[in-house]
Length: 409
Image (cartoon, rainbow, N blue to C red; front, side, top):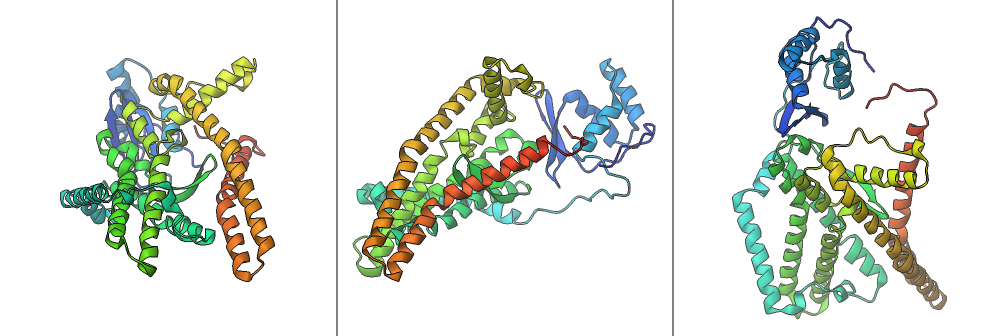
């Protein structure tokens, strides 16, 4: 890591910064690399003096005159360096860039005409369901054919992956319309494998503008259910291939409804979790809640040396985590109970049925049907286990380095 110049009488160079003032805190950071820090109002004011070209010592004297307190400006510069806000020696500060890619598309998708089209689509779907109640998504719609392979491949896997990617794309486009960068990755929520769109730049956006990027994915899910329902309505009563497509559309619609319901598992950091912490004014509620539970446990076990330092918690996170931590624990207990009493027994039964099916028919088509079914049925659990093991190894390497590192807070 490059070190800060010891000459505190010379101005420092800073990257282009963004500021968002909220109450007695200011979020400051770099939009080009999504690196942000939370500063008190006086700290942000000091940073603005440095950005205006004052030397660290001159800015420190101004701070003392303004607030009546001394500031360790060298330590302050170290914080800026850790956040990568300082331009290093020999490095050129990036110039302001133009609009991010797909920004125009994002604005078009969330423009007033687009919202009018979305409203008409939802109204038409509701009217179709009222007229034909059989179109309402229901559990039996999942099994639109007798082939387990076709059900999993077309209805659940291939029939859902495009909609999942579209869900994440709506998150990204809703953020890009605000000029935010985004990244897509594969992550894990307990034993679920998920796609994750990172919009770190939202922390530098006023809270009222954060809600749409957070809920855009669920909006897309609703539109997909409505579109699939209307498509099925047009094919209702058909025979042959059209009849298969009719049943497939209803199957996909119900699977999307299941994913919408999954968003209410907010303790798994779903879209509704991020909505909740924004409304509640929290910063990192999930981490604080986990650490509160850990500290309660170590106090009960009388192992205070293993407690987590609470000094980094914000007051709001601390207050909300007092009740949210118990809700989160109950949620994990519920999912663990479901895993032990439903998921695993169902998996065992499905495996037995597959083996029995092989005993009665060893034709290539039947063998392929069974093997692909088992891979698709259990692949998510194995992938979730792999991601969990990889995350644990990374944490272990970080927690137990070979040599004392220069750590950044």
